[in-house]
Length: 316
Image (cartoon, helix red, strand yellow):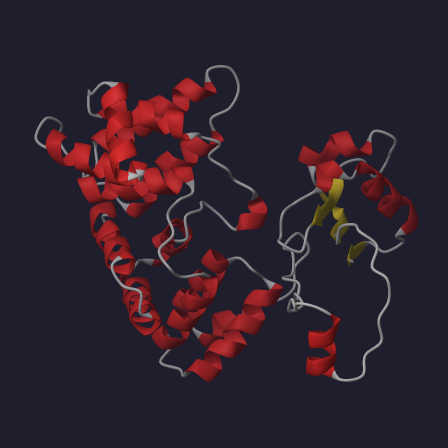
């Protein structure tokens, strides 16, 4: 799919607040997308580049994005800033300036995958001069796309692309694609809870249908979604809702989900295993209940797990 056509779907999603209509639009989009682009399209619709637990961040502040827009459309940074202040949305500012700029630069017919790869390049830019690389690559991308695409590209980079739906809405859309009812959507949700990578889940269902859904299972290195408690206002409300209860003091701390597999090398984590010999570099990661990786924050947990866990592989 051309990214310009994909952006029209994002525009339709932005223009509706009705959940059923949003689900229908997503189902239509999923059916039209090719298998080789489905994961990228789903991730981008939610405003990220991969499953959240992969922690791929753009690390690009508004000021850098503003500079990229300035370069792309050959306009003073102060003028971009003034327009941004008027509109309150840098994506809308990019869209407006892109419309004025049309005709000065040829619009390339780029696919969803091509734009995704350019965005990935921006996110992965690191080291000396990385900020300049991010700005230049963003400017080049903006120059070569239509105005609606420019709006969504800027919002995705800044993390402000909120279209009024979540991963759960996409799961409902997948049930619709399979021609199943909402009850079937619950079984998709259960599978997603054990393997919360919405792009991969969509790809499997797109390519293999219900058979693909059956392939989903718990996997080391893929954090499992934690069931979160419902917040209530106080003890009285808890008793009213639950009746007789047992209660205990709760110490402040962090929930840790630990994944370990001694048979899988993980060279990116070697710095955590300085005191280890034969086991140096095996896969071990920790996550929060929100699926954020915290491995580097708690090296003592990693060391303790290596010494105390006797299993070859485990999820704790």
